[in-house]
Length: 146
Image (cartoon, rainbow, N blue to C red; front, side):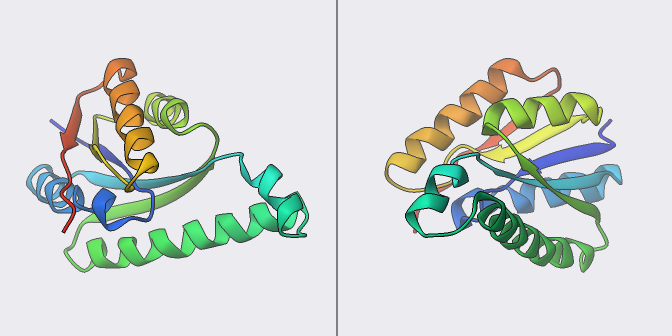
């Protein structure tokens, strides 16, 4: 039923709460899990504030995202799950939806809240936009703080 499961992560423990669910489904269906982290284009304005070039900051942020995802990949591989990781650049919901369509994703599994505070509202709206725009089933896990 599911061959490819897309799991968007933002680096937070709240977003990672979807992983046990995605892992269980991947094992059951022998599916590949594709972990994705989106680097938003805000880095351009941040670069000026911290005296870095946009390219250097983008490279740094992409490397941080890649390193984070590789840690998650290792944990899933230890469970004998087929997994790969992708770092993308763009607006979060739109990038998830575009990637899901291009990669013929069968299921998007994500947490409804990835950050706390204002980020929580933003990530909740990302989940809502993904749910509304996805051409495949979406599994939303409400993450809990604490």
